[in-house]
Length: 157
Image 1 (tube, one colour):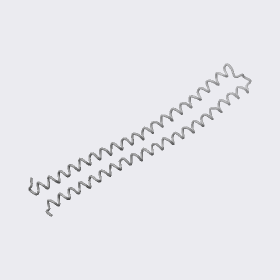
Image 2: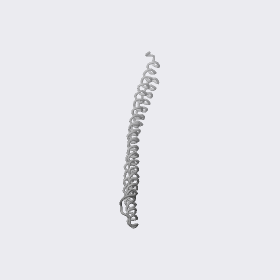
Image 3: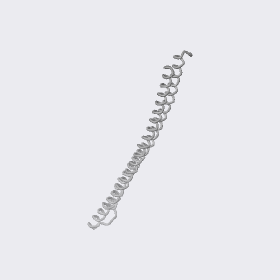
Image 4: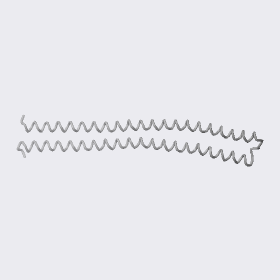
């Protein structure tokens, strides 16, 4: 086998190895994105559980506060009407607003984390697609170069 043919074969083998490596890199990019998205979804679920527990605790705490206000009012011999009722209503409103704020914040955090997982998957697919496109372009260019070099060196062109 001539030197020219050997060089062309080496170039083709190198192009194939590069192509294979880039295809593996694309698979790894997708696998990494899937893994990271899975972690983000797990994190979102944990955050949701923590928020649910915080809401449960806050509700119980608020109920205890309102019971304390009612007991304090009753111990002073006041009827639950007029100003005492207004104070209780305002306290109840403020405590309920705290619960709603916690719930809203937890929901927003969950949505952000879940969207982050979707974005991670999308980015992984885009990266893998770009790597694959580059691998085909590189393979075609390397094969064309090998063919051109072989034909030029062998005197056929």
